[in-house]
Length: 435
Image (cartoon, one colour):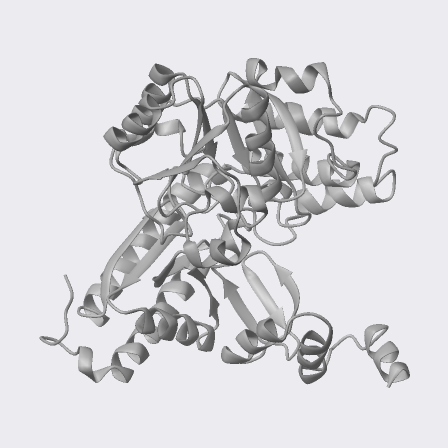
């Protein structure tokens, strides 16, 4: 048996799907293997641009990926930077200074709001959130105020401000001194901060992705900034999913000219090649870590090969105009999905909404969302469901999609929608409509 496993892992260029599923069940997660079986049990082995290839040679348009693939998969600009660093100096000693980290930090600071000039690199989005929480405490803000529907990660600190109770309950007690207020409700936020003047840190997303692509009312982020300033609260904006062009602007805060005290980024930051995230802060907020850089460290923070991916990602987004392209493609895709939903799913889909290339299709019944997700996979399109909303299918395709890719996405969405409508005759026109 051991010899058979070694031959497979050393192995065959085309892995056997049944063996991979068995290995997951035996050594990783049986639950994860079961979820994969629900959509056909495919094994992905290659990716390029907007496309994934499975072990049987089948290709799928990747409109999922949880917001990671703004540059598409294996973009040459990112791969080139990473390959160069791999063959030169992939991991540093952590004793000497590293020029690639300095370049990556300068590039990131050059595209964030002007006052954000201090960068701490991390490995995951949740680690960036933890950095923000620690910086808040170092600045005397120990009371955390987050939003209902918000999602910020699953480490204990991040989970303490993530609102969904099904994720939180098994891990209590979490961090103390946390308040949740309704997303989009500035008076509720002001009331919470008035009770703890000068003691609070507020964390908010420009668009709540995991809650089902929830878009706040116009002017909300600007009002949050003013409210925080009035009550002496720090403002953290979590742009881990929304930043770097995903919404059709560099950052979700840009349309309202908001500058937070700390901005969090990740997902797209590594160019879909290497996982990396960052917390970008003002000089004043970051000052405690300037004074003592050992207060918050990580062995692989700002590793040279990771920093090369950051450089490749930011220069690619900037030089290829992917922010504007995300706005253009997002308008095309959202309009197309809206038209199809109205025609094919008139009493199934409640709403299509989005900003740039972060788009949600909300259904009247969670079962319909799950069925569309599965039907789309059956029609060669990968999307995501939402951790915070069972009734929403989320699309976050790359800004590198071609016009032909967009046509393919819409044509397959139309086909999958017709299949869902046919499978739910109880939702035909005039019955069970929920508005």
